[in-house]
Length: 207
Image (cartoon, rainbow, N blue to C red; front, side, top):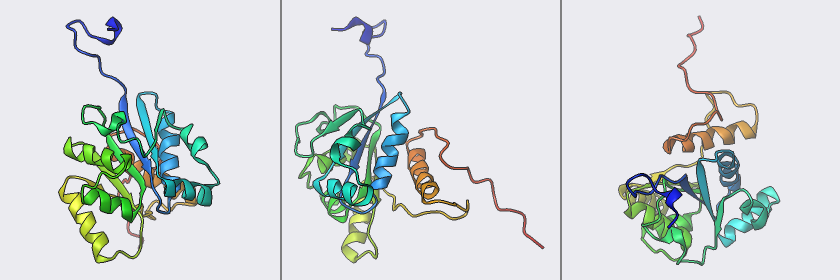
């Protein structure tokens, strides 16, 4: 036992906040990478990363990145086949999980409780422990199966968060649009940030 890890009455001291980040095979790998970049600069948050095989392909296709370089942005990297990893258990304390981006295959597996790899198992754990699960689903247009799966996840307590850009702040670059979306996701976990201006109301009506 490490005495420094315990308080005066033998109760473990709070550890760093933990967030699980998964990158799957939908387009939009930049959202997961940007989340990791932002969280890397927050020492109070420990990130656990999962990248599916299709996610690795998209990292290369969209960003010219590989699994190793993205893994360097996270505190802990898990193999998606390792269903015995720490994050596969409800006893692993976390603030929740973000799937960024979330493919329709991953959405379907989560919606139907498949737990066929560590990504979907970790999501299942987050749901059963009543923690926050955010799925940044990427597909267009949606078919009925997609919509029903999103409804099922929402009914289970998850949050379906398509990464749709907002234009009311008049973004000038793609990076600004990405940061706006990433900032909105971090808001769901009450993570302070300065990625995007806060809405202060409509401008006065020009006459």
